Length: 183
Image (cartoon, rainbow, N blue to C red; front, side, top):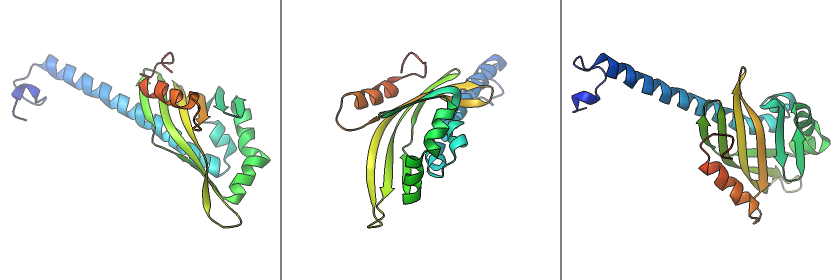
């Protein structure tokens, strides 16, 4: 650095300025850690659901969390776990499937976060052995930090099939600042 005023280790700098600078750095680091924790939680969904770990999938949500998929509304961890244990989902696992979660855009505001991303579901055709894209969805995640860390309060998925609701969901999530009201 060429500007002595910018260097936090400069002996000539005011100690109060150094404390303020460190406080800003700590805030930025905390925000980045929160964003990384939320991202890790979201990206764990695919491997957990594709390996049939029902309780671990449900544990990503708060006890009364909501998972709103086009054709299915699940409220609470038990309903989410039941979806993973269902015959239909187990059939997908048995055939070979991958829920691929794209990197989320995460915004944290205190103890609330909003994330938006895409997911795709790729399934194996047992006759050909090839893979096919079954669905692509827009995802809006709302999360809250609690005593046990970050958990999903509401996840909304909408198929990207040309309906206006799906891109609107993406736009709401991309514009959100992390507060629950934004999304």
